[in-house]
Image (cartoon, rainbow, N blue to C red; front, side, top):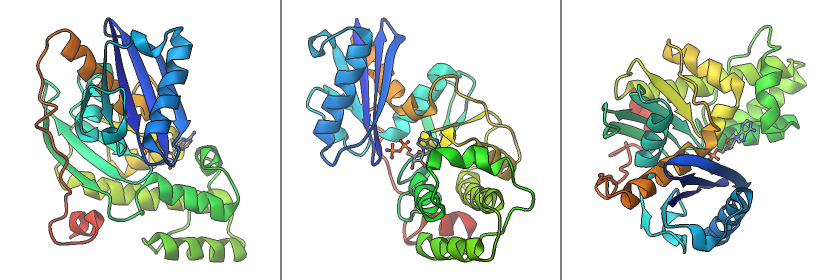
Length: 285
Ligand code: ADP
């Protein structure tokens, strides 16, 4: 039985294929402007890796910002539910997931059965998202994938005073002009962003077993800065952290094929903010 999960996000599209509940292929691409096109391409390439065609998929669950436009999906689920499900599939003891993607950051608390008990997320402001890091990398003329390694050479990390992406970019350019070293600037950026995300997570109370998912978890500098800001170690997912949402979606598809009922329809993402424009403001107030 082939179950598929497809996660079309703001910056990347991810696909995971399971055969009888075991991962047989995963794939990640940069997202295209049209979510349906992204989904077709990423799933097509994932199927190719597994030596299968679209007609082999018995059930597909879609998630991510583009989840409503995935033509071959039979069902959709929120990213909150999928990141929780995917993380607990790999690390059953995990009770909190911090997912930082391209345009939002989320903290999700889970019970021992993988049900989402509380969550908070910010999608109102770029600070604290992968996009923030991409813009800063662009200002420094490096690739976002280099930031983690470069930050390991930091000697005297800078303090970034601006939260807003627009002002922070100007601040970075000033720091470069002042002659500050790139590793110190990048390390300062990681610390500032980790502090904001940790504040968001602390708003729903930290659990002991926490993992980090989403593309930003590939940034080793952000990973260790988040551990520092949370004051506790993170449990590392053994597979690509960027594909955990798609894995959760594939697990929901597997459950549907095996007759296991779950609560994916009832979990509707809600924004953490009721009256403020930025969730980080709320978490810090
Ligand atoms: P979305 O689901 O919103 O498309 P992702 O979970 O794919 O977002 O995360 C995208 C972010 O992940 C990028 O903005 C970037 O900051 C980060 N990222 C992606 N790949 C890497 C990498 N190889 N190294 C470091 N960071 C990465």
